Length: 455
Image (cartoon, rainbow, N blue to C red; front, side, top):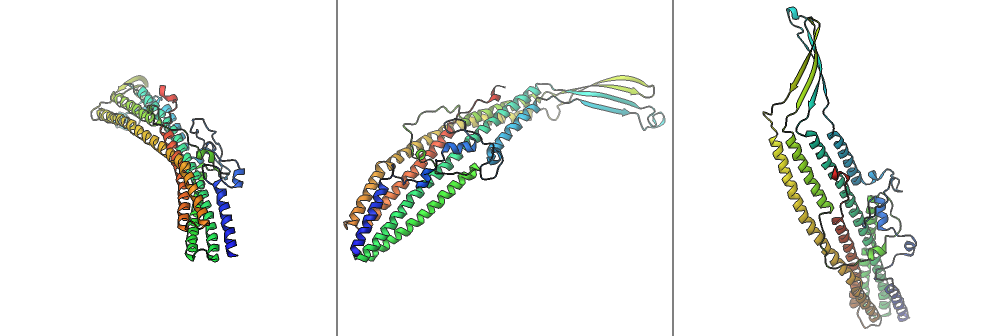
């Protein structure tokens, strides 16, 4: 009787594992039926919720209200990085208007010859002067200020694009992390189910006297460890999805896009890329323009300004009125502007050096990202193709041999462990591939045309 029950349990076990082997390629367990019925929450949907362009460069729909979580508010509230960049552009725009303003005239008044003695007692001999003083900027100060403000506005606009590109990368990486965590959870959940079945079969075989108790103990340890790993993976998947929802400030409903996660685009030898049009290089060039404009401002400040004034003076003693004309010019005795020019020129040299450094760093980072993309793609294709097929076949043979008493339990456990590790390696390689591709897309993001470039 015990042998009959054990044989029945072995058959049920093999039927369950055979069903797992026929799951959709490339070998990762399929999602639950309820999850499959719901539409997938794609990466483009996540980017659209964040209000940033997709990786392909198509502008995503910007959200104007908060998600359904009840927080409400605008995208600026939900995504502080974009709000800060937008405010920086607004501040630079206002600063440009301020830079184009001319100095205000001054209304001046003086009362002389009062409160003295004799004929000057009281205000009987006072002289009242009222007039206007107008500062005149010389040396091209106002055009230099406007040029500097334009350069800073352009830099702020580029920084806003950088903030959007960084946000796109951050959303993509969190999406990849959540998708990978869900796949790992599915793999480990299936492995826990297999370990649980193996434990039940081992228990029946011990009762039937086919094997010793050590086999049951070994299967029990495997079952406990597999369940702990599955529970841990489930919690990690929940945390990864919660992190994505926190960034988007909106709920993430339904399964993540499995087809996108398992897709590997073609790859080959790294292609040489022109780094001049990337965001990093355009930002460095904008810093150089800002430094150049600062040098121009410093040189213009070396030219003293004039202040022209015109007054009307009333002489109380004779009740007569006379005109007074004034002209003032500062004497550059203690500060002739040379120190400021030297400082600005040093900052200009620094900006040029940083631009050269940015070229080198960007090229190195792009080359490294291209290599990581190729390596991860090769690993994923090997692990999800011939590697996974070989591990599945080895596990299948080990299960049949174990059920027939040809293989011991250690051989079965080793085959199951290899299959589980191969599936997890495949998931890890897919996550590494998409992460490297996202970083490569961020590094090669072309800089948009900034309206302030030609001002």
